Amino acid sequence: MSDFDTAEVRQSVMEALAKLDELKHSIDVLQAQIRNDFERKMELFRFSQVRREFLEPFFEEPYVIIPKRANEWHVIAPKWLDFQIGWLERSTKSYNIFVVNRYVKWFSEIPASLEDKFKFAKPLPFKVYDGMLLTGKELQEEALRRYKHFITRREGEDRLRIKKGYEFKLVAQMIEDGTLPFMPIPVKEEDLRPWDGIKLRNYQQFAWKEFLNKGAIGVFWAFGSGKSLFGIYALARVKGKKLVVVPTLTLKEQWLERINKYIPQYRNEIEVITYHAYDKVKTNEYSLIIFDECQHLPANTFVRLATLKAKYRMGFSGSPYREDGRENYIIALTGFPVGMSWEELIKLQVVREPTFRVYILNDNREKMRKLSELLQIPVKTLIFCDWLDLGEKIAKTFNIPFVYGET
Image (cartoon, rainbow, N blue to C red; front, side, top):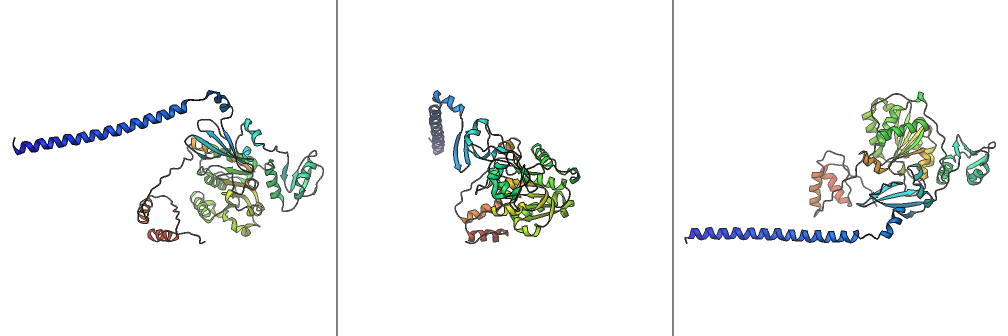
């Protein structure tokens, strides 16, 4: 056999051995996959061994109620169950976790089977209007007993005079006690003008009708559901001088940007302030005040903001919950609650579940490289940073503002 023939045979053998190695690797991968599939199916089989004696009680009560803090609970229910209560705090692959407090009955329907479990207080037919607590004859004594610290005197047989400066605190206390004490004050036709620059969605139209019928509403929709655009619509439709109160300068800039974009013709009618500027506007009178992100307002500002003079009010909040538990302050400041669940908004494709991507990087050099890529995306971007020196480096490298606090 020639050297050429020997080399050819050797090459053929090497190729055959390489193919055998590839085949062996494929067999190993397939074997591992079969083993994993078998173990997973065995695990599923183990879980499929249902103890039927527990099925009936499960379907009688297919949720778990866990206390979160005083007068607040977590309710955990399987995701496949058509069940909604309170506010959807988070979701796992299998379960929805809701937060419920004493005020959810005004935001969403409560299944009758659950009302007794939460022991919600029964509302009393009291209303607050024009410095008076309207009680009716039969309940005047009861109202005086409950709220004597807020009352200065009787006014006839069916009402009580509220102490000057105590109306907001009284309303907040009544809300905490389970009573929604507002009197509907419908919006007058002469206070409105036509405008069709934004087409409202169905749930926004419902909220607008609520506002027209009641004159004061708190809009509690999930983040990204169009509260600000609804506010722009209201600012355009309501005539006269208007005020928007926000908790941060960033929100103030966002509101001014939207006003200039959608309703520049009405810009001179509208003031946008942070709550710090209360003293500048406290003597002004407005046709409409909007309180945005009011769940973030400091508790000690609510009483002052409630004294601002306006014919009509709106409040916007992405969540009807506060860390200090004073959700009653939000409702007291804004008016009749208008709610909608996160799940409903997702079904309507108004908001989407956020996408998270995690990049594991070796060092700051790699972080800077990845940041450079991400900052090419033409969207508003916020960068959080643990270390001041790294934050300063990022700001200098990409010529962007650096906001930080010193401790």
